[in-house]
Length: 168
Image (tube, rainbow, N blue to C red; front, side, top):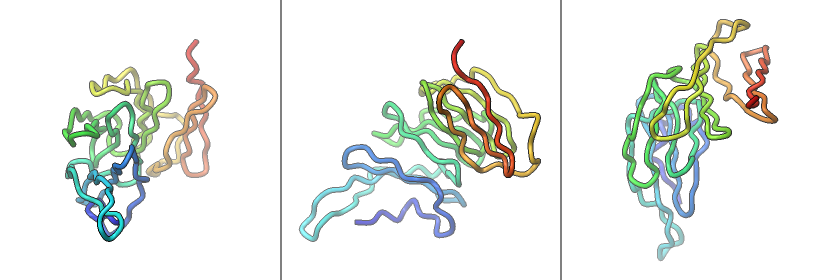
């Protein structure tokens, strides 16, 4: 099977997310993201598009499926999209276009200009705080943040920034 609608034909950097027999993929450069349901057909397997969300133009920052919603960034904002219906539940500026990771019910949203926002991982997208690291390369940051062992890891070209985010 194949599902080509999310492919922009240039760079398809985001890893698709899967739940059951459904797959959601997205790309940037004016394209968007969509969900296809995969089913058996007479000739093997077939992908049938369930919805397409033009606004979710996720260029490089990844998408995360969490509690029935797809979270990711567009060209300008952090978005929450229903995995079932494709409805854009909410969109907030946050740190703008960038990368995300979800840990302990929180979204760590890093904008490509370096700002980091902590946002509740729920359809309300309630921001809990933000900061811009003092030590930066000055170039766009495209590496996804990582959270492990109570630490937030941010790569910025040849810098690795580590922050203690463990609840005290």
